[in-house]
Image 1 (cartoon, rainbow, N blue to C red):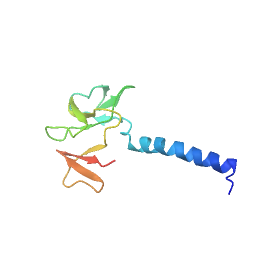
Image 2 (image 1 turned 30 degrees about the vertical axis):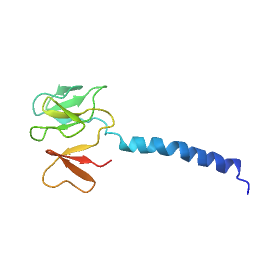
Image 3 (image 1 turned 180 degrees about the vertical axis):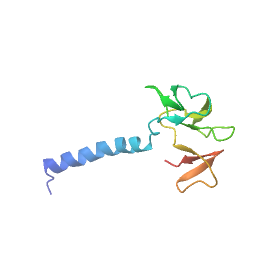
Image 4 (image 1 turned 90 degrees about the vertical axis):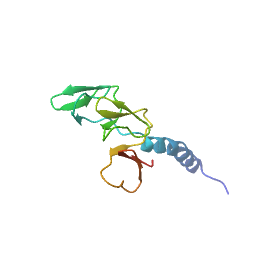
Length: 111
């Protein structure tokens, strides 16, 4: 059985695109403005009642208690993602949602 050149091209496209799509899905979210609760994290600047991300800022979450979750470091009153591949962290208020695991006072995405 012969495979058409178009079918081969489509198969190659999907083979190359899937790893990039998975990597993009697993990436830490884009930094967003945060309500200011003290000093802003590295890469963010104070603007009114918010900490706004600069061009080199990484994703940050408010520090929920004393320590930061795995893959994050303390920066100001926040936990700052150590790299662009750090898992999504959210402050824990009770048990973590499905697809998340507990990491100190935060919940970490399993992806």
